[in-house]
Amino acid sequence: MKQVLSDPERSKINTVNDEAFYDSPRFVTHADDGFIDRLTDTYGSVLSTGDSVFDAMSSWVSHLPEKNYERVVAHGLNEAELTENEDADESFCQNLNEDRSLPLKDGSFDAVLCALSVQYLQYPGSVFSEFGRVLEDDGVLVVSFTNRMFPRKAVRAWRETDMAGRKDIVRSYCCAGGIEVERVIEDRPETDPFVAVIAHPKI
Ligand SMILES: C[S@@+](CC[C@H](N)C(=O)[O-])C[C@H]1O[C@@H](n2cnc3c(N)ncnc32)[C@H](O)[C@@H]1O
Image (cartoon, rainbow, N blue to C red; front, top):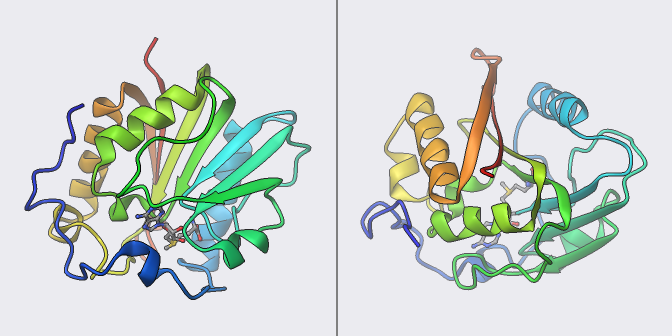
């Protein structure tokens, strides 16, 4: 599996184990209200009633619009946050920088979501390949980000570039995982800028 990032590019300033960093729950949002509203609208445009949704790298909120979903699975690193996630029917904790194999069946989701978190992945090629594996052939991946981050926990490649570079980074992760980018939505450059990469498994 091509990992996209070299060893220096995947390095983090804070090398403490990620589980220890996320040990205490943070019941906050990681972007401003305008960003979150834009994200929920974007999800609303690609999700349908009856969908099965996997929210990767989640917390106490998944930002989903109200719909009657078949199943929502949230993954993250803090159990207390995930327990409070009212969108989620199920949840599990797993450090994706240690174990990149998702305990989820092939083709079992209509949508995989990854909000405000992709900058923390050190082995994105494997993780995006897993996103593709668990998606249905006509499923959708939505990766969203802004310019905020925990800088000491973001990979160096992310820290050392700008928003345009970050779009290219996410494109390269999709490519490595066998996922084709359909479009990139960009909005709100003056506040917490909104970027969402919308992609689908290559078939
Ligand atoms: C800034 S929060 C974003 C949470 C949520 N997606 C949201 O929109 O509020 C970053 C999240 O990335 C996840 N994360 C960070 N490092 C991780 C790792 N090594 N393995 C799995 N998840 C990780 C944690 O679940 C953490 O809550």
